[in-house]
Image 1 (cartoon, rainbow, N blue to C red):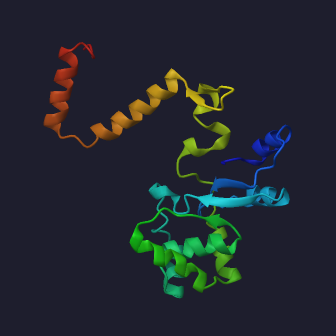
Image 2 (image 1 turned 180 degrees about the vertical axis):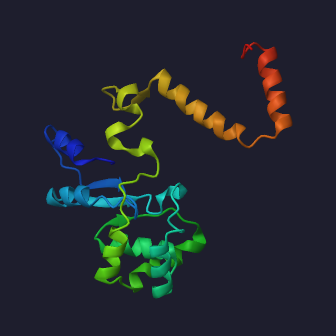
Length: 193
């Protein structure tokens, strides 16, 4: 999954079995028109992951999508899912049980060609996270793949991931908790002033 055309060309130069499906990031700000066409020409089905931008992108605040939701009397997620399905793509959005019926209801209406084009026009080639670019995955230069097919992440990559997790955790601490954490770290020689 996450193959751009150059990755597929490389894979197909030595693979004995052609992939059946390619799961790529697709949402209104990342429509992937050329990549989808490339896959279709090879007979590979495309599955859209992150149809709502994984929450990192404000899809719900987009005025075009808001207007379409109002026009069709549907939710913005329904409009986005219908746009994906109507393009002949597969999508399996993560959802809570109360959204299952809402998601299935996208099969009960269609968007006009004009409305499909309006959503296509939102494309900015904007990924929900720059690290999701398959041409520049963090493990591209920091990971080796053993013959077992198991990824081994470099120490640098594991360190960067831990820093991101710590930054996220620390952002939610109170000042008093931060001071206590800093005191604990400095007294145990984790940090030198």
